[in-house]
Amino acid sequence: MDIICFVGLGNPGERYKNTRHNAGFDALDSIRDYFNFKDFKGFKSEVEYSSGEIAGSRSYLVKPLTYMNNSGIALKKFCDYHSIAPRDLIVIYDDIDTDTGKIKIRKKGSAGGHNGMKSVISNFQTEDIARIRIGTGPKKEGVDLVSYVLSRYDGYERDEMKKVFAMIPEIAKIIVLKGIDIAMNIYNQKR
Image 1 (cartoon, helix red, strand yellow):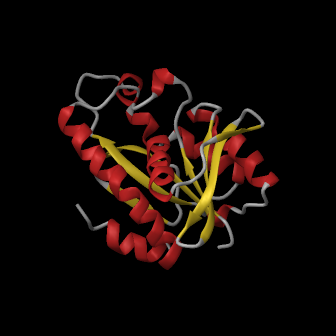
Image 2: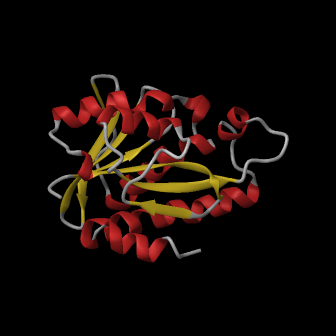
């Protein structure tokens, strides 16, 4: 990989800050802070991005600003402009089907019902895109899906997510240094 592009899926604006659906954005903030990346800046008003190095490898952090369901549109434009291939993407997003605090890493696959990932797959026309799914589930009984993913974490969940976001830079470094397969072997079994 020449340039690795970590992509966080989420929704822009204060209303969505620190919600379950913005786990991808929060993960990128964690990487940026840990590796002292530049501040996020705009690209054609459709994404915010930052650049820096992880273990000596030039990397981008990208937050599509087109809202979750259209994430792939803005991401594709950014990647086309910067000549970034789908094989160089690591997409990070929330997963309500995985318990809060758990992480699942995959090299490829379907969107699994996640609309942001559906948009990415549709716009790049391939499922061969690596991803890190951050558990934000299970959904509470009696709460509708939209309300749940746009809600904030309770006390216990907040503690679990702090641990996850502290681990994300470590995962990014392993991916850069040793590849996605090694990261999967280590972190899909942890916690």
